[in-house]
Image 1 (cartoon, rainbow, N blue to C red):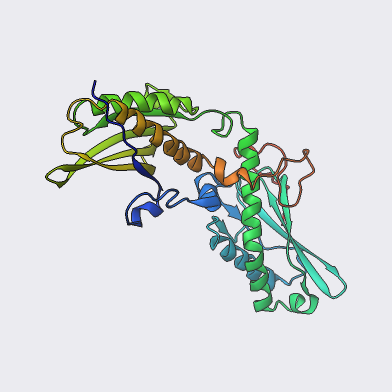
Image 2 (cartoon, rainbow, N blue to C red):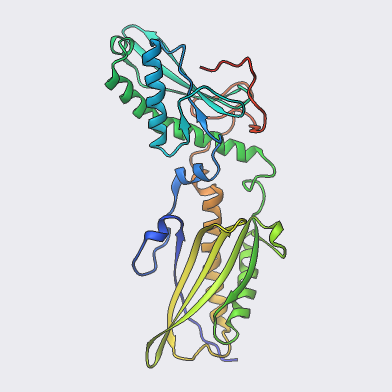
Length: 329
């Protein structure tokens, strides 16, 4: 068999930023969604409700305004938050405040739908007179300062949820339905599919036969582009979707070859292409699951009943409604 060995240039594209990207490959990690992308993919609450705080050392009007400021600050962090009375199934951000000398320090507490504390974060001390007067610039500045801290707190809570759930993708290998490769000349469709199935499996991804068993779907597309009379460009795209068909990213590989050199057998070219692309596919999956995003952010869950600042406590059951008697505000 003729052996043609080459090295593909490749880039990893994570959606949605990749849709607006342009330029030549390689562009590794292009459009990496980061921590907040992971929060949006699997947020701890369906929504985070901020009731008017009754223990924040503010009058009713100022308390309502501050709840609105906090909702706006969290929305700026792409956290789905709203200032309103909690309903069953809501996660709640409770706000309280304490005075020491001539300063007031707010405290932000996250409650799960059962009314259990899952984490706390302290705000910045502010002048007590400005706080008591409900000075709008002071309240807005405090909310804007607290927004990123609370977003990080939610990130830690979500990480603890995933780590404690045995059925979460955090704790089991992802299952991938790899349908096929299309568009390659010669035996490329078969050779690429065979090598990719082997290589992605070696990275801990389970390739399943039935789409209904899959967490993710993947397909390969190959295009050949004529560069000149003697040269072709091979473009290979590995496209990864969620199980409901929403694209989450793709790995693209490009290489110029002598025209017609892959019209029969791909041989080592398929081996090299699959080996290089498999790592990129695994990276797209890990980014979507959130493993990379939470690797440095997640804190170990403290003992039940002892939530730590910026951390989380115990397993969270999102299906349990809050107690009617809970008053987290």
